[in-house]
Structure formats: structure tokens, C-alpha cells
Image 1 (cartoon, one colour):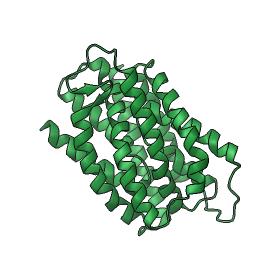
Image 2 (image 1 turned 90 degrees about the horizontal axis):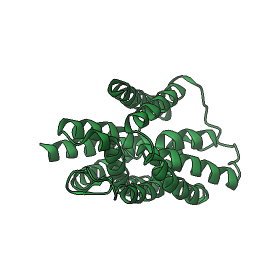
Image 3 (image 1 turned 30 degrees about the horizontal axis):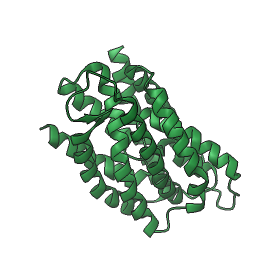
Length: 267
């Protein structure tokens, strides 16, 4: 049943990744925390293991999602190039910071952040400004660094931060989603490598892990998410932009609330 739960988590995460431009981590992390808890993994490593495994799966999900979006002209590669180095630097730094933070505190922080972002997407007006000039390359690099660091700490592809930033920067919602999917790749690579490295010296990890990355979980979630990300990306280019934005807000509201309640409950 452990493998079945991994596949279910991957399928839903992949659909969300393609549809909303997130890496799926907002779904994968809470579900992996629940799965690892149910199977009695050591409590002190559960959150970090969920985050590291989530980042590893996002590598595969992002590739699937960005390819599907790119075919429909949804990826602004010049924006991606301006942000990519910052995303990598932030991802590595974030993994080091996360290694020093208590797992329950991580859950609470990302839960609060996701809820705030959900409220913004649901209730604050943010009309697309198609003629608005993009921010300077330095601003894009700085945003990438901050997004990469926060995303790596919490095991997400950064869509909850990248999509609103790109939307604010003047990209249409569909291009914001597609470019965000591409931005998830450097975040995930840097973050997963960081979590695998910083978790090497942890003595009470379960078998079948490389640092804070659960190999079986990574494989099962990745296969399911890769297939479903393409389905989600196709839907993203069919649904109206406003509906997409509202649905994205509801997803963040649910995931953020779950993480917040879970973290507070343990503390």
C-alpha cells in the first residue's frame, strides 16, 4: 500500500503542476508527511525527508510540465534565463538553511505563506498588464534568488511565488504558469542535491534513502506525476485565466491550511 499511496500522490501532484505551474510540492509535501507518519518513520526526520523527496520528484514533473507548456508557447525563456542562476543559488542556500530548522516549524511557516498567497490570488485584483515592461534583469535575478531559497526550504517548485511575481511583472496568466513550470527545474535540481548532501550524516533515516531523499517514493511519485503533468498543462491552456487564478488560490488555501494545522498540532 505504501507504493500505491506514492502513485496517488504523484498523479494529483502532476495534474496540479501542469495546471497551475507549481512543481507539485504544495501537494507532495503534505501527503508525504502523512504517508511517512502513517508508516511510523522517525518523527524527527519526517518533514525533511518529505521536502527532499518532493524536490527530487519536481525535477521530473517540471520537465514534463515545461515541455507541454513550451509546445503551446507558454514559456518565456528570456525571463527564465534572467532568473535561473538566482534560482540555483537560492535553492542551494535554502537546503542548507532548512537543515538547521525544526521540521514542525517549517510546516507552520510554509502553511502561513501559502494561506497569505491564496488570499491574494482569490481576493486581490491583479489585472493583466500586457503592455507593462518587464522588470530589469537584476530584479528578475534577485526575485529568482529569493524564490529559489524559499522554495528549497519548503520542498516546492516555487509556483506559489513565481506565478504571482510573473503575473505582477506583466506576463499573461498562461505564460506566468508556463514560465513558472520551467523555473521549477533549477530550483528542484539545486534543492534535491542540497537535501541529499546535508542529510548524509543523519543516523536515524529509514532504509532506501540518499540523505533526505526517499528513493522508492521519488520513483513512484515521479512516474505518476510525469504523465499527469501533461494533462494538467493541456487543461491550463483551455481554461479561462480568471478560473485558473481562482482555482490556484483554492489549492493554496487547502494545502496551506493542512500544513499549518499539522505543524501546530505536533507542537
